[in-house]
Length: 319
Image (cartoon, rainbow, N blue to C red; front, side, top):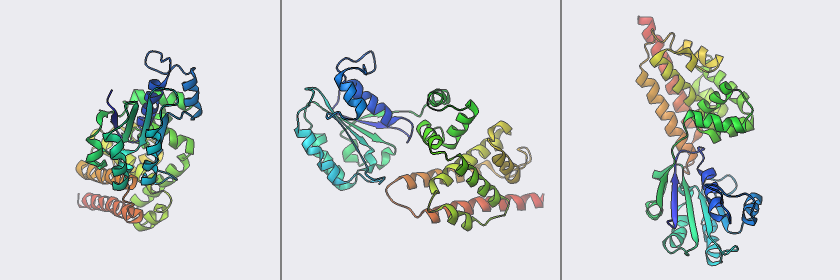
């Protein structure tokens, strides 16, 4: 094996889960087929989270940046022999969270690692990883699970109907770990409330700036998630007219308000898709380290959404 691998893929699709399982397999004294035995002393340490030969580094206290002091602590880990006289593994979640100082502190370890050390770096946004870090790793691309895989896994994690699981995956753009987190956090009521706010916006009952101010400080990510789901669903409905693509009564009302029937809709699909791309870009900015102004971000997107409705309404009047 190489001394360092970078696992690249979309957020909340299982990279950390995969890295942890891989580390446990490599550290296990008696691995079975393609998994750890779960019974040896090393597996018991892994289960308890107390294995001194497995180190996880991530941003502290809910922050977005891995601090240089955290990387400097690696020095003692690298200089200490394995407690089990075997391999030592370092998981860094995520590589784009490394600032310049943190990356520079990590470089020496990546360039001259001890023979028994393996680095596993995770990356949600590979282009944001510093080239000096990426160039020293072997790349493994992990694709997003297909629908049936995600449904099967969620079905083992969540006791809900298939239609509810499908809705969770739709809301999280097919990211199963985000879907599980949403269910565990009980955010269904929040999603419903945001959807009703978006419907009011489309119907002219609430100004875009007012709706943006309501959620900018506490739930900007949830608004982007619901808005992205709506735009994706409306685009699909615009293309093929299938009612089953509209999940939930609020979204169906929005489709009728926004588009009418698919056959009579005059709003170009390109306009919907363009706004969806803008929402996706905003989600990337919000998840990054740049700390964007969430209120201005939501104001811009909701104003654009309202303008699309007004343009469509004017076109219908002319017709």
